[in-house]
Every structure is written in C-alpha cells, then in structure tokens.
Length: 364
Image (tube, rainbow, N blue to C red; front, top):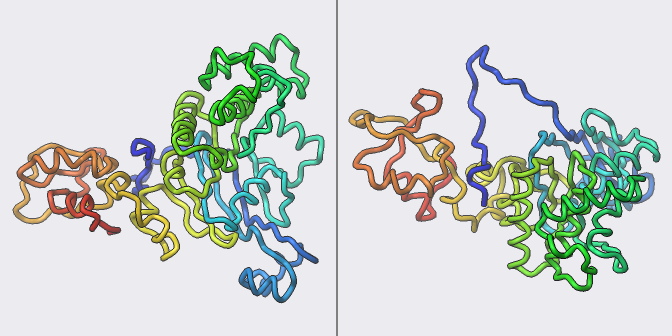
C-alpha cells in the first residue's frame, strides 16, 4: 500500500488562498458502450437507460457493458479502475483508446475529443501520446529485447540509431540491463512484462494504460511488478490508468480508485475515502479485509478537543496514516494535537488509535 501517496479528503481553503488546478490529462463524460441491435438508441432514451442490465437484455437484446461513466484523471495521477469480472472495467479502458468504439459520451484527452478523431489522428495519438500495457505481452519472438522495445519507434518512423538509443534508455530504466540481446523465450514472465513496459515507455507517451497487466504472473513476481510501477511512476511521473480486479494491487499502485459494478461507477476516491466511507454494501464488502490502520489517516479518527485535554504536546499532521502515528500516540500520556497550517483540527489519543488497530475503527 502507498500511505505516502494517499490524499485525505479536501478541506475548504480560505478565500483568496485557492491554488490553480491543472487541466485534467483525461476527462470522461457520460460514456456508454452498448452491444446489440440499435445500441445507440439506449443512451438517448431515458426509459431504456434506466433499465437494469438484465432488463435491458430481456427487453431489447442489448448489453450495456459501460454505462454513464464519468471521471477526470489529473496529470501525473495513477488512476485505478477496478471491479469483479464482468464489471466493465476492461471494456472501459479499451473505450478510452478506441480499441473498442464507445456508443455515446466523450473522452477528452488533454481537451481533444478522441471520439471525434479520424483514423489518421487516432494512429498518431496511439503512436506518440499514449501507450497500453496488456496482460498478454505480445512480444515478437524472433526479435531480441532491444528490438522488441524499439518496435513502436520503428513503426513511427524513427531512425535506427535514435530508436536503439532510446530503447536502451528505457531498458535500463525498467531493470533489464544485460538482457538486450535475449529473446523473449529466454526470459521469465516478469521479465517479459518488463519488456512490454519498456516498449510502452519508449515513445515517451503522455498517458500509460494498463489492462490487468500482471494478472497472469505468479504472486511474488506480480508483487515485484507492482513495486516496479510505483518506482517508475516516482521517476518518470507519467499519468497512468490502471485496470485490475485485485484490491490489494489497486491500493498499492493507485492514487485514486474507481470501483465499477455492472458497467456503472459505484464509488471513486482515495483508498482512505473508500475504506473510511464506503457508499454501499458492495464497496464495504470489497474493502472488508483491508487492514484499516495501514490506510486510514488521522483525519478519519481525530475527535474535537474536550475540556481537560492538555494541548501542549507534539503535533501530528492529519494526513499521517494511523499505523505510522501509533507509536507516538501510544507513548504519550495525553492526546496529541492534529494540526494543519497552524490550525488545530482535533486530537487523537489511545482510544481512537487502538480502535482502528483492533479492527473496530470505522468511518466518522
């Protein structure tokens, strides 16, 4: 899990203190993908749009794989889309790059509507502006690692010397130095996926899409690759959209997580928001087994000061994860102050911390 990356719920800022908000790298608006006869009629007809997945299939012979999905992805953010099998998450990410054609809605890439792009423009965007890492590596078996990594640059018309120089840079970046002359069948599954990751990075895209890239790997290799994504993100800062069905993976790599069910978005937020304030039983079941002390921050468990509280001790940030705060809080003989920007937000003591660590902590 990435406690250092988790953003707590935003607090109101004083008038005049607002910080400029960068334009989203990716904006999705009311996106639909419907399969079946007269599919385009479903999003336009409120009566049809209101039907459940089963009702729509029974009445119209249509399946809504993605329905009414909307979100923004900030520049440099790792945005995770997760859900059970059949939730629509993989169809959604394919719609974002038009590997699957959406039925309705908007996908704005740095302000440009991808659904309005013609074939030539779409090819240009795929070659230069975004890349996708799939579960199946798709490496060319007759090419060595360096040439596999350079393949996308070759297709884009980059000269041999320049593309091999860039390929070597990303091979070094993903930890494959020394394997440049190896063929795919000489590599482990994790190393093959590193080649796929290097190939996606070679073109220096603005956005990287990951479609369950590690689900076929052994658990230990999968964990190593998750750590690799976190490391690479810290080094290159790319905007990433990551699809997974594994909550542990989502918590480990993601800044925010969108949970989907039956093609619809259920809840979108940081890990502490999902665990601290699940919107329904579906999300509550998803996060039930997550160690709350590893994710919830002090913002979720602090209480107002009470008469008799001595407030002259150390101060803690509201964004500190509960488990990290446990030692100083439990070592103190009084509740500790939770302070942000010089303002006292609350206090936290033994009772609040122990409740979370024992599994009894909950949403405010």
